[in-house]
Length: 193
Image 1 (spheres, one colour):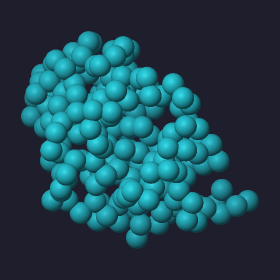
Image 2 (cartoon, rainbow, N blue to C red):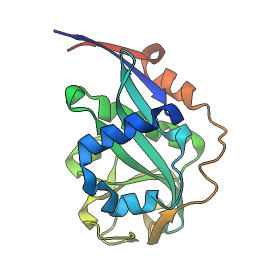
Image 3 (cartoon, rainbow, N blue to C red):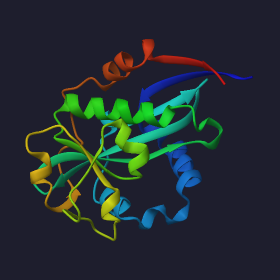
């Protein structure tokens, strides 16, 4: 059996091409037409809250966070989250989500929002958003809109439009690398696969 040496890192521009490839593998060409993708097209994601996982130097997974205003909640939209087929079912996606949520919490985000499968995400701390409370720039199954509330009265304030939030992706008072290092033993997780 092949041993894995997983390292979780803050995303930087050198990861762009491989992240595009990983997302293409996971979601196919239709991914650009989804409502969440339309929000991501409105402005840049926050690299300081976006992470990759590498195995022996090869990037094999990523998660991105995009600053959004959802009703009156200043939060982040999680996604896309994708893991290469060779590394599925190893807990990598869950660890990336956990790291990203913790980084957003430390940065002062009021919520992490996503469109995803409740059985996968709810054990990670996500809760359902009130039915049709948020208006996305495209069709969305309201039962798949989830949130990790971190601010005051988040569920009450998640009402109205959701879109990209200007100014939130630039600059940060959080050392995202410190979040990763504290999240994973010395930034490394070795497993036998």
